[in-house]
Length: 107
Ligand SMILES: [Zn+2]
Image (cartoon, rainbow, N blue to C red; front, side, top):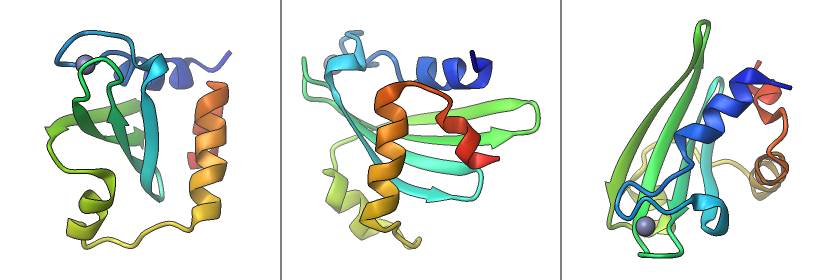
């Protein structure tokens, strides 16, 4: 059991608009850099989209969520930061979907 992993999943568990659970929504990891990653979630109930930046700090995880009208590819278009390779995205997404100790990757 990874407490940090549990906490990080709770950050993105519910839609801020309709409060439905995100387990049936879509999660895309847009960017991963060092100890942080940027995720894009689309609610399958109300179709709201949020961007979440999660950083792994020495005392735990810190997350910021932003409601956005942008599509995932538009977010990346406006981002000045480097993109990750599709292999990286798939690998991280795989960790996410298993809801396991994916945070180990950021150590
Ligand atoms: Zn919603």
